[in-house]
Image (cartoon, rainbow, N blue to C red; front, side, top):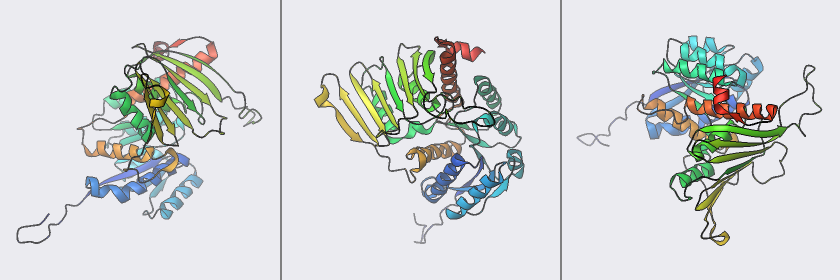
Length: 371
């Protein structure tokens, strides 16, 4: 662009979005990596500058690791705090990434949402560890229309998964009314780790869950470990069947000791006219029609040129931050890509699955939402 008379016009100053990170463990530092790459790329595209101004964690060693990483990434040294309330009181940030341990999410979110100065929030999954805490956060957020809260269910953004979502939505596979099969080779309990996959199954079904049946156990991992006199009780394998209100069914096949596999996640969606599959981290999608049979199956390499940092989740965390930043910049014109209600239902399915394993019966979603 040029001014009259031929002189070059001054570009308008970029707006600044200041980020704070609460919880600087492995995932907190992963977010720091992504924000550093975002800071180097996004200004040209959105006329906005991103900076990380502060970190909060009660563990000094985690704060030290965060500071070291910031220095390695060439970022100005962020201010550090031992408590998230101190971070809020500092006035140093506009948006907060909550990546603290799962059981702390509820208290931290309620403090951020209830704080007088608005702070936008990206909270790692699970939203909270119980349905009741999720519901409390949702009710509190309804009173703060000036705050954007997005849940970190970033697997939606993995390129092969995103391409499969688009394929399903386009109607290529016909009506999805059979089953989805997920094979996850790493994770945790049904609530803590598998909420990613429950979110995807619900997204493919395009419906709300009605009831859940699960079978699972601790068969291989952690059986010989003792912490403070207690043996770990997290399951390491499970089958979970989810029935939806439109007649669709989904299934999660979880195995946490299947490292001898080419892919961590294998996702398939079957419609009445075709089938689509996504494979991570191979980053390929296969799609075929019933009429075309095996010979008609097409393999597609799934890539997203917007990704500037692959990280721990194959670029999906970077795209998650791009979407979060776009929602902030829209100033209320668009909703978060993944809402609190999405976070709640992903937790509710996991809670129902855990209860089903314990009770040996189907558990309705209404049952866990009304407790």
